[in-house]
Image (cartoon, rainbow over all chains, first blue to last red; front, side, top):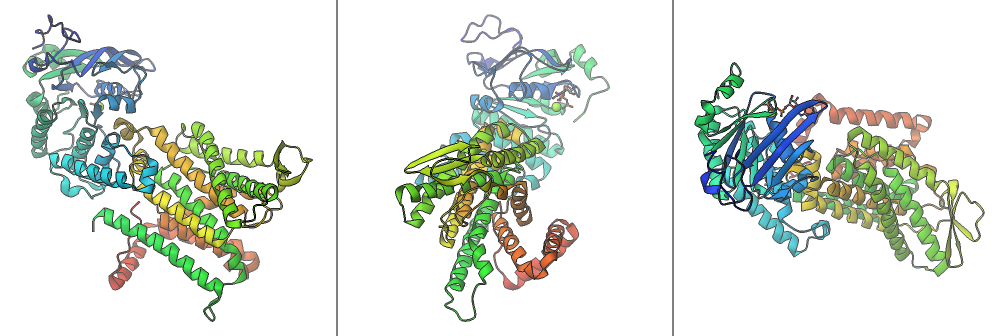
Length: 283
Length: 356
Ligand SMILES: Nc1ncnc2c1ncn2[C@@H]1O[C@H](COP(=O)(O)OP(=O)(O)OP(=O)(O)O)[C@@H](O)[C@H]1O
Ligand SMILES: [Mg+2]
């Protein structure tokens, strides 16, 4: 899968380090990074990070604690500005953009340490995700013309529809901060999906979930990809999950990519085994 | 009841409470019911109470809804007071506009615009800061506004307005005279207009909270990073809350200023900002109805405490501390909840705290 791409000459040439699956070969990759890197006061947290993600690929990013995985997500979503290299989202260079602008290009994410709008309801959390898809301003919000009611209703229905992916419609009125842990993680995914992304980044989506919940989550991630036809990239320490659903896996250690490939290629890679020795976390 | 219906109910209660209080005051003012009359000192407090309510509600938009601690709210009020007084004086002296309600309305609108402009100018640098820094800088700007206004002289000569900075001897009739503040103000504020302004403020703030923009403001309060990650323009929505709040404070300032024949800039010192913040904190951060009640009670209280003469401020402080303790101590809050539960069970009303 890794080596097949060399002769491709489509709209954006896919480099040899790609792990884009076969079915996405003729589509424009949703994400491409070249020599991406960031330093924090001399510490190279991420260095020379090159990755291409296909339009409907499920990709995994793994590595020991502190390897720089979350930092990669922060770079891709423009929470951090890179010190080196470029991030190309859906064919557009994101240099100089902020996180909100990157979101409008079609990247959405969840957070390792959950960041919900805790004082707001579950439904309102999803509605915030839909924010840029409805278009009435402050004044019509105060004057409450017909456009206000119409769009509020449409937004309400859309929010419930999205919540139903995880069977969460019944929780719509609950305060987001009071949800059980697993539900909070799922709500973050729904909120991210509400922004209508092309690439969804999940930072340890199964953390804190029991094996049953993790099982369900795996099915749902694949379901979301199939239903929305989007790319998903996930960071996860649960190897069953990663090996089970990721088509391409990228291994990070000390800020550098040490291996790339399919699940079986990664599992038998001696460098990866070495990096994980004594550190492996079994899900 | 769903949360939305609860919210609607809560808003209706707020509007109803204000309307009923207004009607009761009007009845007492008219003296049409025997033995039900308003004391003179309380009568004089009616317009200021309206102004302080608007101040508290508008500050709550910044502190409670937007989640930024602003310590310069009195600055926006003073901008409103002085621009309102100048506009009213100018309309009267230059154009002989006698119609008081219309003049008051124009003065309030202009005051709102001026305070809004000040809000934009101050918001641009201030809203880049976070937390404590923002609080300190708003405090500084509040003081800067007051000190600048201390030096501004505006006279009306014929139809012209003459502006001066540190120039006490301008031709014509003085409207704004530096440290003396607004002078020779025609007292045109009325309780009815105060009520109208409160209702206007409530419509703006409550409707804003339940709209797309208001939700964005609250989302940014809860998690700035998450809000950015779903594509919200943080600066825009912080600005929206800050400027809306400034506009309302300016209107309140005009109402307040046009209730007295002179108002000095020293009236709008740091203590005034803190006083309004006390209303907000006591009423409950983010709780609009609470702000209204706290502003009313704490404006009346010092008057009621006149009987204690010298000990007035001491009693006032003790009351404040007791209320703060009751609302913040888990033990007392628990007791209070029990009492509330009993009352609710008996009366079976649908009253709930503001769901904001
Ligand atoms: N804002 C920052 N300032 C300074 N150092 C940082 C910053 N963000 C991350 N780092 C450093 O970068 C390195 C990588 O951190 P990162 O959070 O990306 O690891 P991770 O792979 O996500 O680990 P984990 O599996 O524990 O979540 C760490 O050494 C961390 O201390
Ligand atoms: Mg991490």
